[in-house]
Length: 255
Image 1 (cartoon, rainbow, N blue to C red):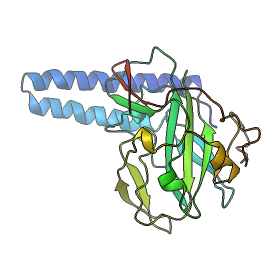
Image 2: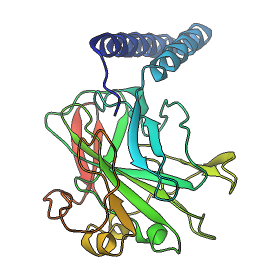
Image 3: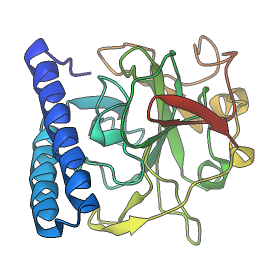
Image 4: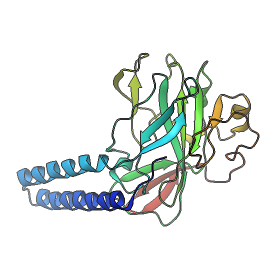
């Protein structure tokens, strides 16, 4: 996992302040119908957000069960107040993923109070889970890892394998879409699907015992894959099954 230095964290904070200020000024101009001036400010805000995406560290979220290659994903791990986590319009860099990559869902145990952000953030339920609709398909396996996000404990669940025919995948953690790739790994576009909590399976033990679900120990710098339920630190965790939604510093949960 890539650590952020103080300079990168300070730059992130600066870019967030600048982009938010530009948007606030644009809203005021729109209120008095100065539309062209407002558009100019919003374009500047978009440029700042683009700079923000360059600060996202590449995080080792998984190791491919087939090839053994480490998979890194650019994630804002400072807190859930960065534009990366805007569920309606996330600002992200495209990851480099293996050909058999399907998607990455996630969950988070939140530490309150949560940070203020001028957008809706959806970090998921408070416990790791799997999606049987995807994982039960032949050849599909998932990798569970712990990814702290500031004061919060996050988990990524990355799915690998052949693309299940006629099965929708799942929106990428914190986003409103998922990437679609060809069998050769070529990016084709986006899909959209968000499962209800009732479609999640929080009972991980059977999936671990069948080795459909593999796991990485929290903080493991070697990102070593582990199989089986014995010794797995993700079994028996207590937490909230309902999904979290954060808006302007207010936390709510729903199914």
